[in-house]
Image 1 (cartoon, rainbow, N blue to C red):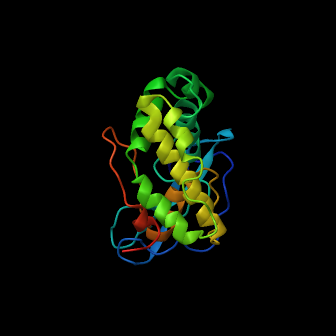
Image 2: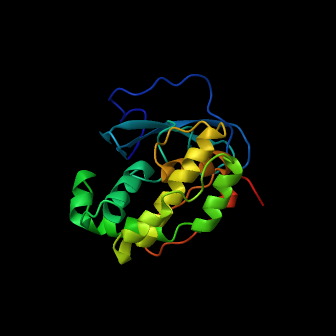
Image 3: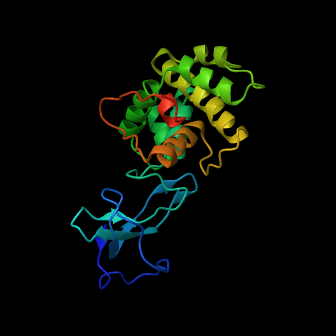
Length: 215
């Protein structure tokens, strides 16, 4: 919800100085109200105030900065999505059971599971993790994911690979707020490239090499 200064009456962070330069043209910007959002984190739904700025040259307004734990354009944050998919793909829960814990719908749980299943190439993810963490054992425990129901086995394998890569990123010195492998990879890609991976009706893959800054 976008709110003007006059409409914003609840407590919010104090803004200091001027907003950052426009991310599109690099020009100077001025403050342009606030955006109130209610993301669903692993700890529950929270209220967040995001300060907005607008370019003096007429570019679209933008969020000046986000809390480290808040992934853009998502009500349900990546750690929450990862937990729901893990409950279905690895924990044997029904879509309804997994969704209830996150206050989501079974339809969302089904879409998230399908999206995760096609998100990355497992072999490529494990190879990258091995480069970052040579002392680790890439793919350890992967065989256990074959016991998952057929419809969820692909998502289980992706989650396993992402957890390993997330651990490798942290062990290599990358500072990340997210706790799940999925959240860590998406957070790292966003910080490194400014890219946001959207959850769409038809899942699409992205290259983990992009997230690691490789060509």
